[in-house]
Structures are given as structure tokens and as C-alpha cells.
Image (tube, rainbow, N blue to C red; front, side, top):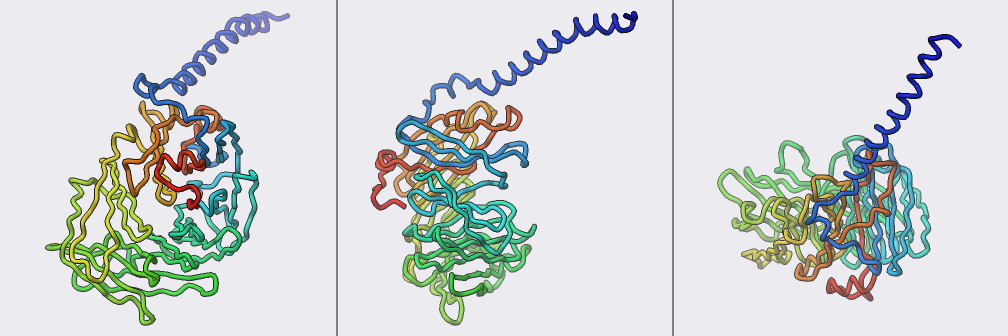
Length: 404
């Protein structure tokens, strides 16, 4: 054997074990960091065995990594499934046991009772989920997805049939009626919020558009539609350089007709914080606020309303950490948050009844077994989560027999 080979052998005998030891120490540090919670975080209990949840999670650092669909039963059993990645894999509830999500042109319907997935074919390609909306009675859903770079795909479904439509802009304020009339809202010009347009369709009718040209120098905020009185009504808040107020419109055969216009608006962002989500449900309007986490609600105005009286609930104490996601499920807001400056150190769930925030459950630590991904550097962040057992719904003040 040559001296060169002997030298390499000696170096190998010395350095290989050293590299193994250093590598193990590095991985141990990473694992310790992943598993370590602060003393205050460690006091938050684990999700109880009798609480049933269904949800989805995606890699916080690698968009090519698999998504995770997870669920637990009220018997304490849990299961996970790795699935092909969807950007922002947010599910929408279709009924008590079924949830929908778009992947490409297909609607995937997950049945958590039979633990099966069925596929419905659509006509519009998608490249990631935004969010979803459901009708007041829970019978219809409208899934909103990214499409074509700057466009939006809308998929109307009741879980057994669907209709997809493409709109070449980024829409907001999606709404759907109990009889399957879908509608979104857009600003005609991204730099000028004086023209508000609505795009509507149904299973039997293709896309149609109606626009509202706001008077003077008014600019619109928080436009949203409600179907609770049968005929579609649109609420929006407006601002000018010198005043602010709100307007109410009703959709008629000739288009949107102004039915109420008031030059008063009492929402104070310095008091309530900045609005990050807003929607209507069962004849009420909801604002979900961010830095100072809270829920603001008030009745959807009528033609006789002159003043809006807002009801505010601060829920900051229920969400002691940085927000990962919030899923709206009928009257329930499911907040997922993390502490300790590290999503991988633990994600927690607090659920609140938005109609009565004094009724809430959590916070609970989500079991790590539900979020096992492709390694520490590809830990999974929860994108959507839903509660499904009767006892927890009752704790939230919700009748399980009527909840969809």
C-alpha cells in the first residue's frame, strides 16, 4: 500500500467519525429547536382527544413539497395524507362531512366520514386557492382560486355539480345565495376605486356584469353583497378627501339601484385596528381586525337605516401569538397562531363564535403528528382547519343538528 493511500486511510479514520458527531449535534440542535416551546407556551394544553378536526397544511419554505391533509376523530384517532401541492391549500366546507378544494381544473371533494376523495371536472384552470364562501344555509359554496397570473377562477358547487367561470382580474367579496347565484366584486380600474363592478353567474346562466359609478370623488372600501332578503343587496363604505359614509344598493333588472346613502361612518381603525377580513352572513356584516385582534359586527343596513351601531369584541387574549391563518366556517372563526418566534415550535388553535365571542374553545396545541412533513426545514404551516364534533360545537353555542 502506498504512503498516499495510508495517509487517506488515517484521515478517513479520524475525520469521518468527527463529521458524524458534528452532524448529529447539528441535527440534534435543529430538532431541539423544533421541539422546544417557551415556558409560557408549554402551559397551553394539547388538542383534546375528543375534539375532531379536519385541516390542511403546506410547507412554509418549499412550494414543491407535498401538502398535508389531516383529521382527528372524537375517539382520539388521527390520520394524515400527503397530497400533491396546491398553493395556499384552503378548503371550503360543502356540508357537515365534505370539504372542497381546487387543483388545476378539478374540484377535489374530501369526505371525512368515509375518508375518500372524489373528483369533479371543471373548465377553468387554477394555480392556487384564495378562499371560499358559502351560502347562509350552507347548501352552496363558491371557491375562489388564482388563475392565469392576474385572473380569478370562481367555482360554484353544491358538492355534486359545479360551474366554473374565469374573470380577468383579481376579485374580492365573493358571495353565493342559497339557490346557487354566485357573485363577486371588482374595481374596474386598479388605480381608481370609483367604479365598482359585480360579476354574477349561476348553474343555468353565464357570466354577466353590472357596474356602479360612484358620484363625485368618492372611493369605495369594504364592498360586500348579501342575499338575506332575497334580492341581492350591496353595501359599501366610501371616502372622499373631506368626508366619509356608506351606501346601499339593490340589484334590479336595470342594474344596481341606490336605496340608501349616508354621510356618517364611525369605524375608527385606531380603536378597532385595521380590517383584514370582511364578509356578510345571515344579515350581518363582520370585520375581522389584525394587530388588535377583534371582531366587529353590525346588522346589514336597510333602506331606513340612518346610523350604524357597531358591536366590538376584543379577542386578543384568546390568541396569544402571531397569526398563521384564520378559517371562517359558518359562525366559527378558527384562529391558528404560533409563539416563541418559530412556527415549527408549535401551532395553536383558538375557535370563536363570531356571533357571541364569549363562547370560544382553546387555545390548544395542534399535535405534531398531524404536521409531519418532509423534515425540519420544510415544516408545515396550517392553511385551513375545521371543528367537526358535536360536543365542541355545543361548547361554542352552536346546534350540531343544524350546523352544515
